[in-house]
Image 1 (cartoon, protein in one colour):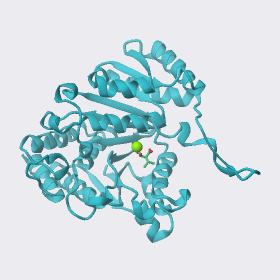
Image 2 (cartoon, rainbow, N blue to C red):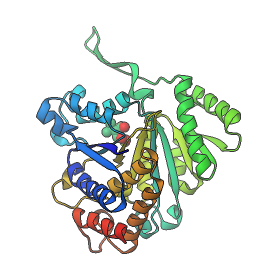
Image 3 (cartoon, rainbow, N blue to C red):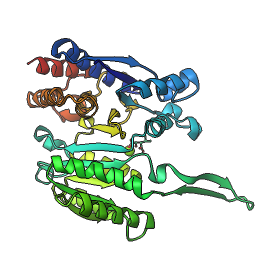
Image 4 (cartoon, helix red, strand yellow):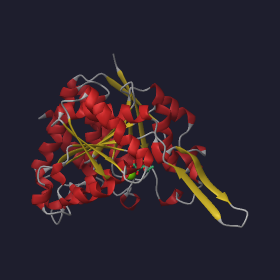
Length: 359
Ligand code: IPM
Ligand code: MG
């Protein structure tokens, strides 16, 4: 069977970094027997420019029919003034909702070679290996009612709604517990149960699930404000963190910064069937788009996650991750992680990974 991928480069540095990931996929196909094929489609602001919509129908159809989607990045200043309904970010939300990608996995792992790049002291971030499991298709991002209305007296009223049903909480909880079993067996669930009823229920559902089906996993709970603080105070206490859509959005950015290298962090968004969308955590970086300076490693590591979670190719995934570690150990650096040292460009970094793969 040949796996079919949808490749959506998107905006800004998206096309440059995805090109390197495609080079890696090509090497895996040609040299390692990975049976894989792919098709590209436009998404985000560039798709809007071409078609008037950030997520054109044919792009969504391609994503639906694929075993996995690889996405670069969407958005940029050019499209910031657009109406919400056609903003590039809408394409991401649309893909998540339409493909049912409810489970967002965002690993934040320290690379020892880059400890100096963190904003925190090296001894604080040494050895951190956190997996943020973010609920991705519910919560305040999608709750109704939502919108802005004009009141009779001329004031405006804006509303978003934080809503979860118990089954939505349970299914993301299962993902977190299952991952914890393959790691250190610890889950920290993050909520705001002291204030928000919906997340008080979140805590109850996660607790009951843990007691019933995962008694072997050590479950703890934390309020989100404390979790934000603990992440910078003592991040190594965390392993798997599971949380709502919006808290996960915020905490995963925070966690990524601990590693000092947002250009290295991949992510996976999975549905019930195991199909998924894979993308680097960083955005479209319009300031450096087109300069050939972007770091392609997060996208290449997203390919590794894709191999592991959607294509069931754990061994090849290990090889890709080992190749990335190798190039870092050998001193290859794009400008974002070079400090004052010497840096290479996007394509050279991609080539270095492929050379390391071929060993
Ligand atoms: C993310 C991003 C998106 C989100 C935006 C671009 C819609 O911040 O993937 O974390 O808020 O989910
Ligand atoms: Mg975010």
